Image (cartoon, rainbow, N blue to C red; front, side, top):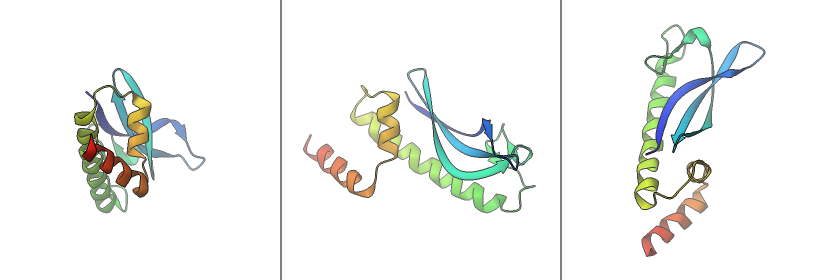
Length: 113
């Protein structure tokens, strides 16, 4: 069973002290990171709630965007894992990062098989 968790990349900090918000994908005891493109200071991140604190000036908007993205990724994860359970972590990450043309192709393949 694959799981997604929203967290910050504590191992890499930018020169201004901000860290990248990432999705950590775990499957069969292997993990990988999927970057989101949002950077926050560690003091603006709540690790228990996996959200941006109210101390950040755009916390409401960013938390809403992050929650919608988590929902979309979890739907994709459910669809992908229901079709095939033999996937490894790199296959799952590649499936998340598909372009629109590849999504249509994948949909057509799943329709015929």
